Amino acid sequence: MKIIKYINLIIIMAAIAAIVSCQPQNKKSTAQNKKSTTNIPNRKWWKEAVVYQIYPRSFKDSNGDGIGDLKGIISKLDYVKSLGVNVIWLNPIFASPNHDNGYDISNYRKIMKQFGDMNDFDTLLSEIHRHGLKLILDLVVNHTSSEHRWFKQSRSSRNNSYRNYYHWWPAERGKPAKRYSFFDVNNNAWRYDSTTNAYYLHYFARSQPDLNWENPKVRQAIYKMMRFWFNKGIDGFRMDVIPFIAKDTTFPKMPAKYHGNWAHFYANGPHLHEYLKEMNREVLSKYPNTMTVAEGAGVTIGEALKFVDPARKELNMLYNFDGMSLGYLPGKYKTLDPKGVKLVDFKNVYTRWDSIYEDKGWGTIYLGNHDQPRMVTRWGNDSPQFRALSSKMLTTFLMTMRATPFYYFGDELGMTNIKFDSIQDYEDIETLHEYQHLKNTGGNLKKFLDNQKMVARDNGRTPFQWDTTRNAGFTTGHPWLKVNPNYKTINVAVEEKNPNSVLNYFKKIIRLRKKNLVLIYGRYTLLDKENPDVYAYTRELNGKKDLVLLNFTTHKAQAKLSFDMSKAKLLIDNYSTAQDTNAVKTFTLRPYEAVVFELK
Ligand code: ISL
Ligand code: CA
Image (cartoon, rainbow, N blue to C red; front, side, top):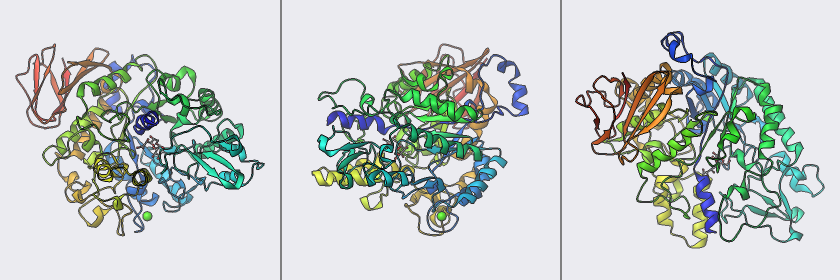
């Protein structure tokens, strides 16, 4: 059991990525970068893009039902464009009973009715393109909703032609070997179904049965559906828990004492890369300017290139969970270690993941998404004193690493965790089911709720904060999830007017990244490795060198440097005032200060 909980822990942490047809630079920056671009092999538009993730349910409600929708997104594309981002990733927008907010799809070719219809989608896509942006959709094909036509057929009889679309275990063979489920109140991934006296597999909720990818008909049906969306003109897919699609379908017993790679039992099945190659051959290769990014749940550093080495012809990018997994107690369900995260460990994770893409492949970087708490609460400091500074510092990190940033909507405002007091306020199936599980098993509910204030997924899903009007301008109705009461100060309208806002800093640093290819393609070198307070690194490309210094603490901190700073040119500083001008071989940073220099 302990092992299985640990599996969950590892998987708990993950996130996103993207691709499309390339317009890498505008005219001015092309000229500026002329010299340095000559030696950049394998330039791709998606390596130079910033992806902006929108949780459609919470972005903008157009009809007052309290739920964000496609028309709402259309009405806000000027805002998205003004940020300087290039790609929009939408969480699932397909027909769904919404047990897991769209990650339980009942029809892959229909739009969720709360979000609109196919006309709205077509308008959205053409408007996104008219704005010079690209769109990637969420591909959720490890499982469907139990209300999907395939599953209804599959469960109806053992002889149904859809029977093998899912994983069934006939009860006469006894109980199947234990598998852990993420969102099941009993933590059990096998659900007994009396209609056919058999168990079906669901790694997530009971209403999310796992598709059987061993069945070629399943694979062909998925490829066809992917072509349907590509033919409409979308620019790529983010692939939900894609390593899970392939399993060891003999479902062996988990060893009592768990060593080694849990994913062997849950994911990364023997045929995974065969399937991804097949998907590439049959779909992706036919849409060459698009992008793909795998949610690499459970993918270790040693396996990443199998997904993204271009020579293997599988996917473009993968996002890993190693960074997100830091600071959780082992063996406990999503519980943060009160000791926090050591910056040295944080630096090591990102440095190791950078190194695997030194020669081939390409990385992604993110600090928040719809499965995570808010970036500033989790990795920075959401107190009034430091919220803006630490938000900007974290954004500086994301925009200066050698990887495609996946930036979560609202982080550009410095939105924070809402920290609900009561279980009644939560909507997320994960929180609700784990609460029920603890209740049934006599767990500590108070402790659970305290911890959820930091880790619950709903913290990152509260409505977007547009202005100071009722419900932050998100809806005229009753919002599906409470609006964070801090919306009066943290919102687009207020921040657009303030030149020093988190929002304006975000726009500024995106511009800096865009016109400075060193920050995109340059080699990354970690400096002052053991420094417990400061994250320092250089980026180098064709003789140009930039230096990034980030103070992750509430106090002053010094970076030890091996070069003379006297001629360095300041490119950006989150304090926007004079910095340590006497710096020679050390540089003193103020609390949460972030600076980027060009070294001469
Ligand atoms: O969010 C998690 C727990 O906090 C993760 O373990 C998450 O379940 C895992 O990363 C897979 O996530 C994806 O698939 C889920 C869906 O609920 C998530 O929102 C999605 O990102 C099932 O489709
Ligand atoms: Ca609506």
